Length: 410
Image 1 (cartoon, helix red, strand yellow):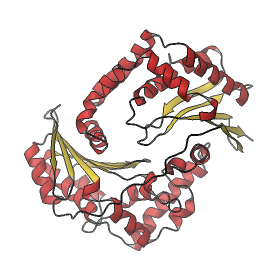
Image 2 (cartoon, one colour; image 1 turned 90 degrees about the horizontal axis):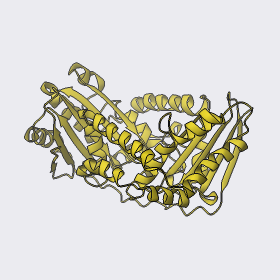
Image 3 (spheres, one colour; image 1 turned 120 degrees about the horizontal axis):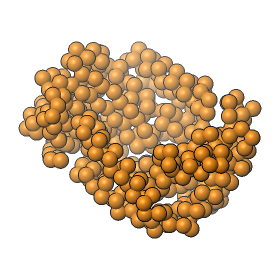
Image 4 (cartoon, helix red, strand yellow; image 1 turned 180 degrees about the horizontal axis):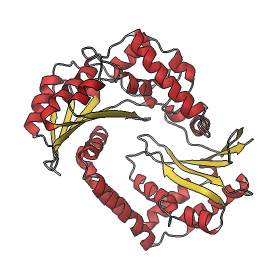
């Protein structure tokens, strides 16, 4: 993969990778801002901006129509660490995408009407996903149980509905001009476009945007958890559910790859341990999953499941802990480990066929280091040994590092 780079005078980093097998071009722009950058009394702002950025910019009242007329598509997503926007267009209309993306970086249409519309959309999403959906408030219960000081203690959608309801235009403007800046972003262009043309369009449309004073990030580091934390709630849900979370390392830590493989060993596919032992053989759970947060700062290793009828949450938790103890004392079989590595490598290969997937990944890796590191991921996963997995299990799956949520049906 030939990766080209160029940095504009205003600090915007351009990453380019040409793919002549398609007639399309992808623009992916990632801003170094997520819910961890929010004020604890004004949460949900990063997610609100994901919506506001489609509500019209300073020179373009309607964002969707021009991209659709150009034969393109666009969307966005936000998490704890970043905000990501992407567009795909035919090469003939690629300048439309540069024009649109640069205008909303320049400035949004800060109007009471736009804020009211998007605030209403976000509030309805909050109600639908967190208040009215079964198990929808799990993150609002589990995250503050796991984190006392770090901003990962609230979900991306926000801590409380009132934070979005009470957002003012001044609040919104302040948040935008602090974070949505060329010197706080990475622009990736992939697909059927030469590098020099991508540079030319980037200079034309993004070059005139001035740098901004992006604040230096000073986040409270979460102290080491010293004892197990538990919470039991009752809700109007069809089944009891078990949620367990263990503190784990940050994304850049070399041990991250061992944790990621460990989660796949436990629950990726029908032949995974938790599915085979606790669903198929012992019938303790009707469904169970294990996954990691994958966050930039130290995050969580999750195990979640719904016990079978007649199985208590205490019995279900004991069954999970038996599986975790095995990982602490027994080395994972080389064949089992190789299977997981093969699945990861094949997934990477197939994902990288898509020019849009490549754009998204390059943006992430460039923001957090170097775009070229994307091609080393398989190598890092291949280097994980059974001993590394056992060490990760021994240091992580211990009582004083665990939070447990019993989610009971009324």
